[in-house]
Length: 359
Ligand SMILES: [Zn+2]
Image 1 (cartoon, helix red, strand yellow):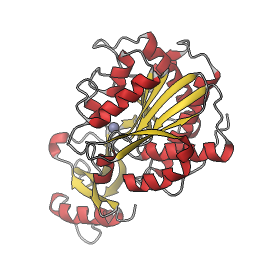
Image 2 (image 1 turned 90 degrees about the vertical axis):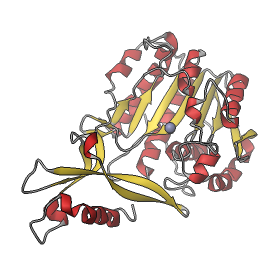
Image 3 (image 1 turned 180 degrees about the vertical axis):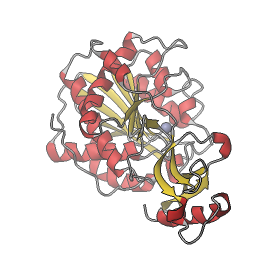
Image 4 (image 1 turned 120 degrees about the vertical axis):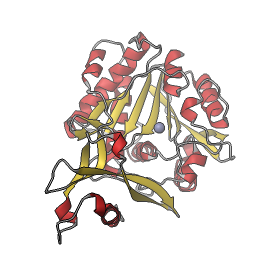
């Protein structure tokens, strides 16, 4: 299957504040239908594309610092504009940014410090209420719940560039019919991704938490597909990953469009290996004593209108049993002397800080 891709080049990099999104969305006003408002009163626009019988609700960036899937949705908007909307049997309801307050401040939580993905029962926040109202109004046949995951997630010896979940609906994690239908669609998306990123796809932990939106909507009877965009080697801004997400979404939507989605074949979902928290960004190994190593993790800090990656030493309490996206021997960083790893930590952090200045 040839999957078309167009990039909405006006939005690039991890920091996608509401203002930038608003500028780009002006070009797609013909799909705008209504909007909600965040706790800090920023608009949360909702778009409607297509007229088919099957209804699909898609939302992104309910965590404000998770913009990869928002960029992927803009890429789909661009694709539908360039080539026409291809899904005759499906209508899409799309909320590109559920948490504009968090997006502006580059935080997971909303303007009141609440994690919207733990608010599916309480519905204490305007954003959660808007999503739920939209859900009730649309009565979707499928939902797509779009997120980013940290660079610590891996699948075997590879980073988890994309992870999927068909959320649980009970403590025992029974794979009910609703879950199987979500798993069936995931199977198709995974099959496609394996062609380009073989081994980089994971299955997310399915512990049940009805406060999470995906679990709650699955419980209400709607097959819900959680997608976590993750790290691809070298791609800290997740510009590679956005393409994989846009294409995987296209494949998932095509499958729903072209088929009466049943449960046959859903078990291939279980063949996707589980995500593990097995990576850190950097490992530095002492050449003279390879048992001695430290790990460094990059923290994202918003400075002005860009994200700065700040290297932080990983505490020994977290263990030493990690893989790393990049490994150095100490002598590569400190070539001029026999130096002791631990006494050189400030120097090493500074070295990495310079290396990641413009990633
Ligand atoms: Zn998230």
